[in-house]
Image 1 (cartoon, rainbow, N blue to C red):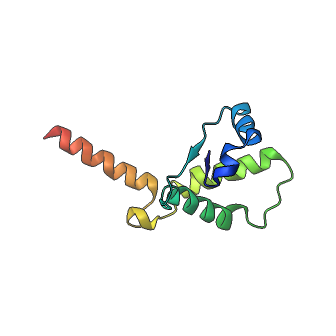
Image 2 (cartoon, helix red, strand yellow):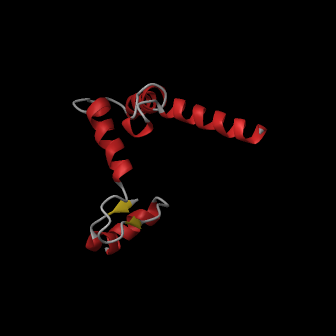
Image 3 (tube, one colour):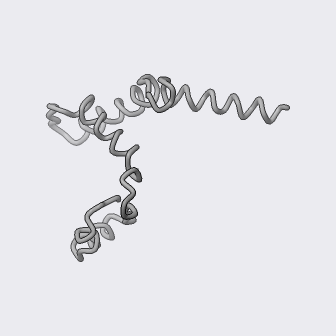
Length: 105
C-alpha cells in the first residue's frame, strides 16, 4: 500500500491496519512524484469510467462490475496512449510475438 504522508505512514494505527490485512507498506522517495503515476492514472480513469455516480446494492454487484470493467474492457478493449493507442492485451500479444520471433532466429 502506497502512501505519501510520512506521519500517517509511521502511525501505530496505520501500521496495525496494514499488518491486519497482510499489506506491505510502501512510500515514494522524497522528491519523486512519478513513483505512483501509473496507478494514479488507472484509478482516475477507473473512477471516471466505471464507478462514478454508481451505487452498488451488494458487494457482489460491485465486484462483478469492477471485474468486467478491468478484465473485459480495460485490459482487452480500451486503447491506452502509453502503449501507442492499443489495448494492454494487444500490446502483450505483440510483445510475445516479437520474443518468439527473436528466439527462433
